[in-house]
Image (cartoon, rainbow, N blue to C red; front, side, top):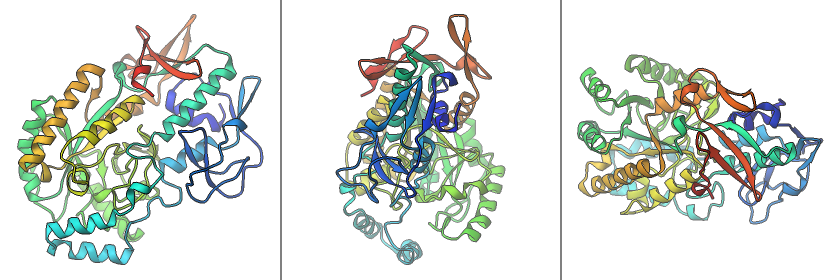
Length: 456
């Protein structure tokens, strides 16, 4: 299997023989934006058409420039480059702060002295114009999944096969995955954690609590044990939540060492950066198994960008579990919503592509009765989703373990059929992708139930 097919192989875990992809000659020297069909805006180099330095209403579509011959699909772009540019936010405008470095420094210095209402006004001012951003897509961007689906459909056509076997995305044939996370930011939030666990338990949901190790509140061994003993889990949230973690490389390395030590003391395998500030290129300094800091689409976050995927993916040795829904603070306090309609819309879009539904709800905000009631509405909706669609509700560490195990499994021939080999294969389910009138359809064994009704 060539390197260009690696992304597609990792996404589907199908037999390599079905993926014969290559890149056309003479890719452009510079990168730019272009389209690959109506649902995929790409950024990278191309061997055809024209590239744009920013997303515009009209972009060159390379679809007609994809060719196939003797089972081989020839692409006018490097698939790995395109997908990595999206996942790691290597495109213009991504990872930019909404405010200057000096203003950001002043804001975090003065924030402890500012009234909450003034903080919200400042944050709303920073959001101006967010509705007009064309890329990533709002409210959920599924570009990586759209690219993979288009290419698997092309591989199907080129191979002449009626279907391609692959390892289903989630264990036991779950249609999608769901993980709830709670970022604990204040002493009041810490004190509410016990009641929040009661609420979660009443709806059959377990969650991960992200703890700030320094300055914000005291952390006792009893507090940590109370979370673990009830079947919830602990992750690290930044160092002290001052917004400066990624400002300076030298200072970051100093802080990363402290964060890693706290992780060892707390027994935490996962990390989330404060305010979802992030620099994926620096993640090699962390000793975590997984990270939960990169939003799918960051229109409402102080740092712009978005990874444009609803599936886990590796950044070096760390598995990224992207934030695929809007945070509760943004929803209730910045957008002023008083319903869970946006969450439901996002969850539907994620479930259509069998993705990871990742939620952030702060105990600091659900302590108030109105928001607490809305949170219970969300939990009721999630419980119904589990019952009606077979969504897998689990902890981030379980998603991490499953995705890593799946990445080592293989689909191998077994007589005239196929089977899955590898550690953990007893939880894996064989699925098939087939072409139904130009649309990719998934069928999941053992009954080969079509789940296309969950997908657009």
